[in-house]
Image (cartoon, rainbow, N blue to C red; front, top):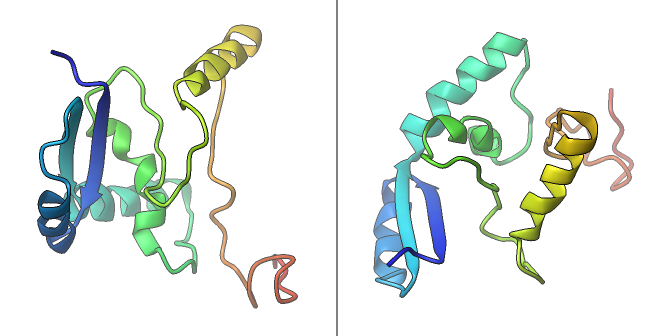
Length: 132
């Protein structure tokens, strides 16, 4: 019986222990865990170095960039990376249809996070912060 949801979690040792305890066998959900240090730290640094980027000053550190390296580890034709603190108000599977429509109309699509640039004096528009 194929699971309805495949949940891929990138965790450190503490997270692995916690989620295995609080997310016991959930019907129709397949949970796979990935080691944060293996998936994120080295690979993210390699991506930053390759493109000449500096790590953002954002509190999340390399974890904020981790989704850039996920495709090398998740065995799926395609996937949607969603932060665990997001509230979803409808089925996200429609995002695949939207993405497919963009690719059909333009031949390509690039999806990127809001920004991965250092924040100086706070976030732009919040507390007077500006990009420099």
